Image (tube, rainbow, N blue to C red; front, side, top):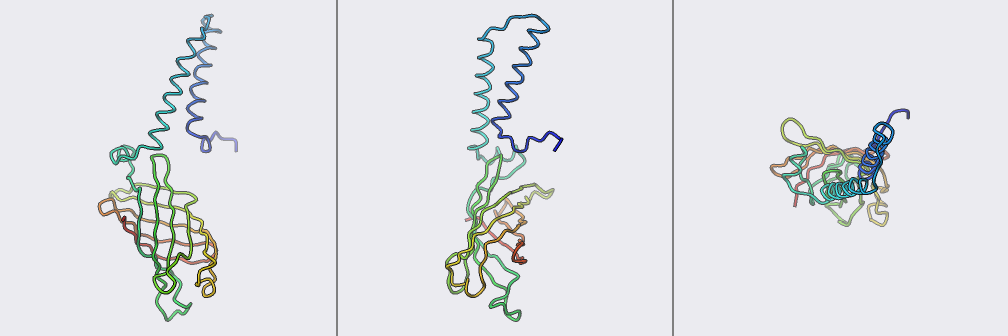
Length: 210
């Protein structure tokens, strides 16, 4: 609590704070040390420059999604929709002698150079194929590995579809979980695993961009 941390400062606010503090320091230096008078016009240009820089940085951060720009930042452009299979540690009909439950999984990744978010849903492959749940990421982390792949780690919150026929069978619950996926840029695939907290379940995920 005693250390300086700018984690929760909006980027635009940091730019303005730094600019305004720089101007105030310069004013104090001129008045106290050099005994100079300050003209109002001298302050307007720095403030205008701060506004221009803030606007440009905001635009680049929010709207620039060129592949080459992501590469400059050491990232990869993962924007888009992906579909594939989720294989749960649960068994069909909760019977260990039966196969593990396989679900269709669909996700949408929304990314800019400052942040990345994941939204998705899962559907049974058998029987009632409507969505059993929707989920969205609570936090995300994208890191590059030495072999050129990327690790996408995210925590998520799930909202169960209590009107689904599976609720009577498996007691669907809203819950939180965590996923670790490896992204291969060359074929735009994601593969990895997930785990849930409340349900104490886990499984594998394989997805491909559509």
